[in-house]
Length: 591
Image (cartoon, rainbow, N blue to C red; front, side, top):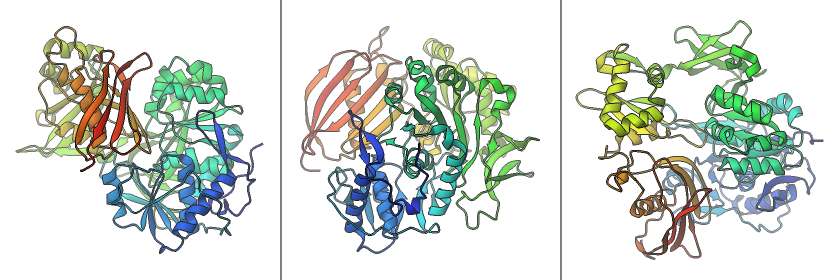
């Protein structure tokens, strides 16, 4: 039987059993207990309690370490600014108005004032205090899906109200099931569903998210009391396609999805394989959870309707046809008593539910003519050469223009190979020409194997703009499409796919294109220079091996990891079937 949920502010004062498992981690699935968590929190409190109260930047790859960091910050009366990633430039920017940084990453630069979550914290027996619901617990950064990132504050009581609502509604079905997540706890959905909800409800959660469907299936199969899968649409789509999903199905108690709508085909596939369609959670960083739905095939057309949570009131702004929310979960002054506006267009149903009809803030002007980007994307998606498309307005002289980033179907790839990039653009422009004024038609085209998405599967304006503004090189892009990414202290692992029009394939070799070794090394160096923040010049590369060729369309996993001192980095490019290349990069001691 699952123990009663403990509010976040009383987790340390409620005396949960010391041997109660908190996380499952490592190859042997050995748990870490509530007693371990208390020792880690105590160690951190001793090191930060004499600092002034204020804001701490918090970033931990491990969920256990993240829990310890949050509880320690709250214990000393401060708040946590949750960093969305561990990139040095991100952390440096956030640290500018913070007391310091708390992290489990030993590789962070000396320019940051870092308090590290230790593997062996020692024993620190402290008198815990209860944290009041009004305490400002968190600041999170929005995903940047439609605009620049902004900070959103959360009081402890707001978080607890949402956790209590989820436990009351979904908890009986979950029981003592383990939490298996594919999403990051650096964002609100992952933080709530992967970490804070199971922590307060007494369910064990895995310390790191799964990067691949095979990991999800393995963890589900090993869970003695069943498992709850916490995912995003982009991850669940791949899970639905995985050959081992049916074998893992009996162990699944529930599946949650958030970050965007899950396509009906994936929902149907998961329901057939695992016995249940995912529960989709609709909301935002600002509003918290708003509504839920389960796209079961038996519901017919009603499967697309969203049901508001009991504590959430909804209405529609008739002028903009957008959703308004009044909720105890929302991050707005006096939000329990006032309406919070969203930019999502909705259709209200007679039964109290609603349908989403796209974003109102994605209507832009080009040549003084309004353009609904969702409508444009939808019509592009109707063409047989297109699987998916994303559009945005870009600055071009003399007037702004529309850019389209397009995922091509098999027919689209065939057209690309026959006639090149201009032939695809011409076909799509003819398709749009009968419905749109010429001035608003896309003038910038990028063809990719997958749209760039964040760990929750959301598109971001920044990622699309970076892709569009990159020079259109002869032969196509020079980098692979990033499908997934996981990072930890001293390593980064990516799953990528090689686009059919990769620039490096040109002339290498006609009729039998393969990715040259120099391009593979370039991808590794990009990881070193970018997310890993290694600025030192490369001294030499040794133990270099190219075992198998990489071809267009191949999915490749790339791992770059520090070995020994900070000058040596090993890398490997591989798939489930074979290792493509590997080696060791040695950088100079001087930057």
